[in-house]
Amino acid sequence: MSILVTGGAGYIGSHAVLRLIDQGERVVVLDNLSTGNRALVAPAARFIQGDFGDFGLVSEIMAREQVDGVMHFAGSIVVPESVSNPLAYYENNTSKTRTLLQACVNAKVRAFIFSSTAAVYGAPAIESVNEKTPVHPINPYGRSKLMVEWMLEDVGRAHGLPYMALRYFNVAGADLNGRSGQATPRATHLIKVACEVATGKREGMEIFGTDYPTRDGTCIRDYIHVADLIEAHVQALSALRAGKPSGAFNCGYGRGYTVLEVVHAVENAAGHTIRTKRSDRRAGDPPILIAQADAIRAQLGWHPQHEDLGVIVKSALDWERRMQINLR
Image 1 (tube, rainbow, N blue to C red):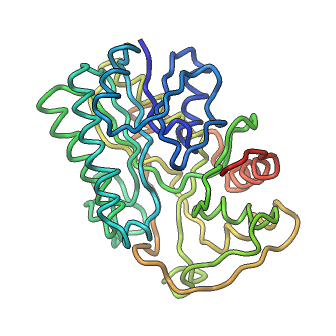
Image 2: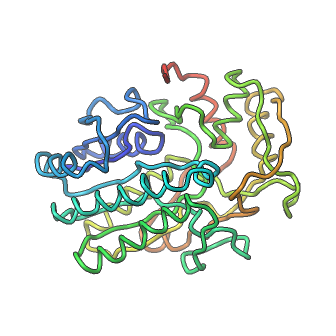
C-alpha cells in the first residue's frame, strides 16, 4: 500500500514526503510543477508529473500503486490573487478536489488528509479562534477551501471516506536537516520574502497596511514551523488508520506576531537591517488571526517541538542561504 501526496514537489508537500519516507511509508508524488520544484522531491518517492484534477490519471495511479491514503497539498494559495481571479481558485482548489474525491471514493481510500486554512474563519471578532468559531471567509481563497471541507463532510457521511482537514495558520521555516524549504517562485509568504531580502535575492519588501488595530499597526499572525505542521499530518494519518473519527483541526501555536516583529526577527537572525516600504492594506487580509489548537493536542496527541519564532526564522534563513535550486 502507498500514500499519494498531491503537490509533493511544493513547500509543505515536500516536507510531508520526507517525513513519510523517514517512517517507512511508500510514497507516490503527483505534481504538475506549476509552482513546485522537482528537486525538492525525496529520491525514495515515486514522482509522477500530472494534475490532481485528471480523473483518469489519478484513478490509474490509485489502482497501480495501491493507494490507501492521500495527503492533498496541491492548490492555489495567494489571497490577493484569489480576489482578482476567483474563478481560477474555485477551479483549482474546489472543482479539481471534487474530482480527486471521486477517485478516492472509487478506490476506497482509507485516509484523506486535506490542506485547509485558517482563512476559513475570515476576520473574526475575537483574536483567537477554535474549531467551533463560526466560519466566514472573506476572500475566494478561504471560500474555495471551506467548500472542500463541506464536500469532505458530505462525502464522509455518504461514502464513509475517513478524512481530516487541517486548518493551517502561517507556515514557515524549513527542514532542520536542510533537505527542503520554501522554493516557490515569486513567493508571497512574509518570512520567505523577508529572508530573500536579507540574502540579497530581493532589493526590498512591502509591508501591507500599518493602520490595523494592533500593537504596532501591522497584521498579527500565528506562525507555525513546517516540521511541526507535518507532524500534525502524520498524527492525523495514524488517527484515521486507528479508526478515530473524521474532523477539522487548527494547526498553530496560539500566539501571534506582528509583521514588524517578524521583520525584526529576520534582521536579528541575519545580523543586519533589511529594506522595507510601507504600503496600503491588501484586499482580503484580516487584522488578527491566532489559533486555539487545544483540540489537536488533546485528540491527536500533537506536541509541537519548534514553538519559537527565532527557530522558525533561523531555519528559513539557513535554507535561503543554502538554496542552489534553479527555479525557472
